[in-house]
Image (cartoon, rainbow, N blue to C red; front, side, top):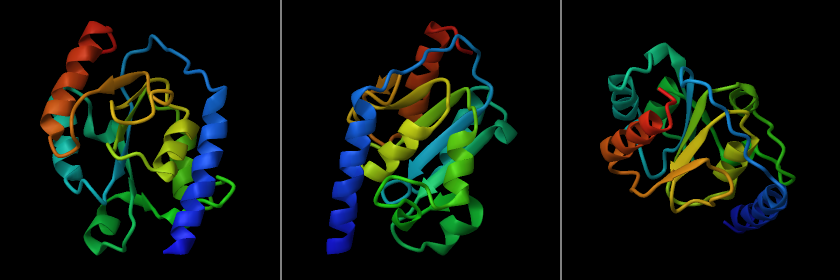
Length: 172
């Protein structure tokens, strides 16, 4: 328990120092490849979320999910890429190849699907090479291009609002 608190403290300091001079780069490309970063401790309907994204014209093979898991949940681990707190060092370096591969991919859009701010998730979002980042309004404003005011449990509202704004921005 204390280890978790101390590690989160150091990760939070590392994230804040990385975000201090961070500038989001804007891209005018259309959205084709989508990465989704999910906190499975609060949201477990990954398949429903994927199906909702597919309804708006994104091909299922162009969607990749990375899930943050606190506890070993067998059903989640079998279906999606995942990572644990232990996969990130105190200094903010990724020990897991799954996390490194996810952050190195050049997604057209990254959906940071978590509405409770955690240093581990912020670090992955910040490190991602995605061209357009989307998340919840309750998360640090410096990491996302677009913030949507919603709650994680209401995924259909979030995705519908997201695609409404993407049409306005001429990204789809």
